[in-house]
Image (cartoon, rainbow, N blue to C red; front, side, top):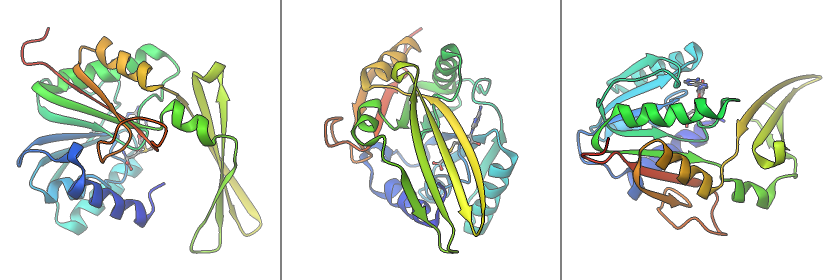
Length: 234
Ligand SMILES: C[S@@+](CC[C@H](N)C(=O)[O-])C[C@H]1O[C@@H](n2cnc3c(N)ncnc32)[C@H](O)[C@@H]1O
């Protein structure tokens, strides 16, 4: 999930994506920043960057990555259900399927409400997930990834609750040992996530099929939804 290849891809996206083409000095919140793959290139572009994550281990990796790159980034340990710094940001990012983790749908909506509160009027939220329509195109095929040390990871996806949710199981096979991990998360169609943005107060909601700002259609590999906290709304 956090391979060096993904770090390079994140840096390339920050350099080239029209959706990440932010005015210099933007105040950016990377919600669920993980090991900081987006933090470093965002800071390198001159933005004022904060990374929030619940995992101390992830934050430690992010701290090391930022220190190694000489990136001045603020890191905060917090649960996305509760993290609110009113009007402190111009942009809130939630990338690489970091949304929809909570069993109670109201908790997922609360995350969007918090993003709305965290944004200054005129600010923008971007959520990047695996759309339900995209997943339907390839789910069911087990996927294996070989790692440089000879071990490999097998990923299996299982649809739950009439396509409301997804369970992803990973098995890491190293020599004659195997370790497993699972995540359950909500699955959203473009229409469902669009409606959730509006329920949280966002306007000018748009759906894209990738960081290149292509339309969300049958060619898409991701679902990216953006919305604005209007200047005078609420
Ligand atoms: C799929 S990873 C994505 C990380 C990062 N956005 C990236 O692109 O590499 C999801 C991250 O969400 C974090 N996370 C999970 N639950 C959280 C919560 N309740 N509040 C804040 N962060 C959480 C995890 O620790 C993990 O780093």
